[in-house]
Length: 145
Length: 145
DNA sequence: GTATATTCAGACTAAATAATCTGATTTACA
DNA sequence: TGTAAATCAGATTATTTAGTCTGAATATAC
Image (cartoon, rainbow over all chains, first blue to last red):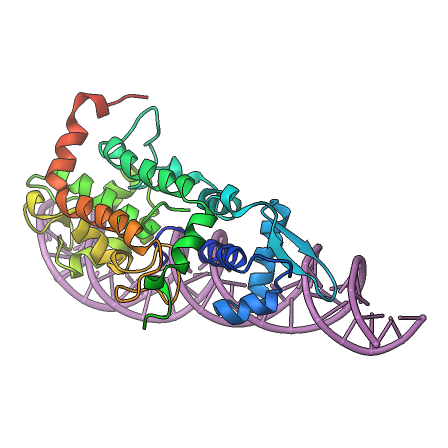
């Protein structure tokens, strides 16, 4: 089971990160992404389309076409991506799934675990793709096996 | 989408909590649980069976039969329940789903988010069902609507 | 302008999870 | 000892998520 996000969402995060790392003149094709990230071709296609529709990516058709970030990597936070794919329900709903539990009538762990939800949210908002890309370039994340 | 745990797991947590709250001489039937917790009857049946097989609940068949905690509520942590139903993969796997990411070769956010995973784990281990039940009995969690 | 490489769109299939159904087994109690 | 109330077991169906397939639309380059 995925930890926190849907598979789609995980793929989206990976794809956007890759685009940030490879940002340049050239657009990047679904094919390149699918090869490098080992994500099923057509499935990734859908996800990239979604991200494009949501305004996070820019696309161009035809030969030499492909995808690129629609804005500077600094402006794209992890939250933007998660929101675009999975939505933000997780920031509100009860961790234990109690149907009666809500902001107004919290269950006994709601507030305690509310901190957890806050924490996740904050991490997502604070981390932008540029930072993430920078981190990935650090030697300790290169070709360790 | 559920926040962190599968629906089954959420139901399990709710059911065990209910059993702790109602702990007494009488066994509690699936029917009572299904009515109070609004969980589909047969689905809940399966879950209770699972929890029984895993040793967290005790069951008795026949009239006057039903379920009860197999041990004192103090000894059952949220982690026990989550582990029994969903397993503990989430304590290890990459939050962003990077396939290459592991303990040995963490991705750039692995350590940062590792804290998050740790946090979840700790909360689960620290909170036992007795505490949870005690909290639920506090006036601020009673009959607010 | 034609061939080719791409995204785009929508229908389709597969797998995982959630939920239901049927009937067997056990056991209390009248 | 028979009946009813419960768990137990396994097959089945429904829903959601993941993944695939086909072809149309678009744009580049020769």
